[in-house]
Length: 247
Image 1 (spheres, rainbow, N blue to C red):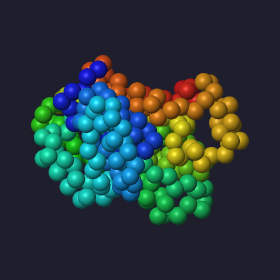
Image 2: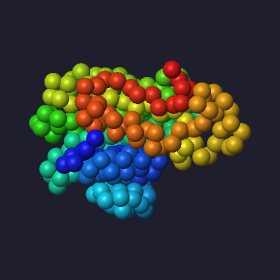
Image 3: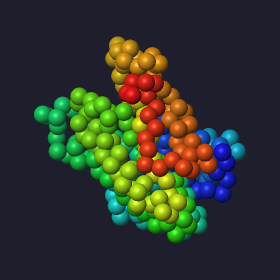
């Protein structure tokens, strides 16, 4: 599955799942734009990994939750690159806490980044995709958007909201040959899960039929399928990458 000649933007691409997606798309021939908001060193490490493997990439800093900032950055990217063919909405944060004690600011921060950020970036990217009559948008959701999770009402709500956003965009953009899909990871080995102690990790594994946590590369593989030629007749769908934890 070649992406030669395609330009791809991955939000939150400096670490974890985002980094794996960037490296995979770069290996497929896409020129990758690695978005970050606060860790330029990690973004540069991702860029260097792509280049070392023979790909090409640039880093681009903007906050997906800031509409003006994100729209300006994507406009400039399109001006410099000539097009934007693939968007992976991966940027996400957590502000965990029981709902009874959750601060409104923690609710807003998670919804603004994880859900509104996907809307802002997709809106900006879709303009050039519609003109070109080709595009691929993938939203990174989560298993907790389907199952819920105590202590993560904000995160689960944002990830569940991605499903409605994905399906609505898929219907709106289909006539312009733009597919919009989601990937819903389960428990993946990233910075977010590394803070869990060994006992909690073992309890999680016991709930997963494949009995292990996934890797960022597992998620990247699903994204690669959706943006490549083999996924061209798939839109409005969610691929669950969770080891059978949710079916």
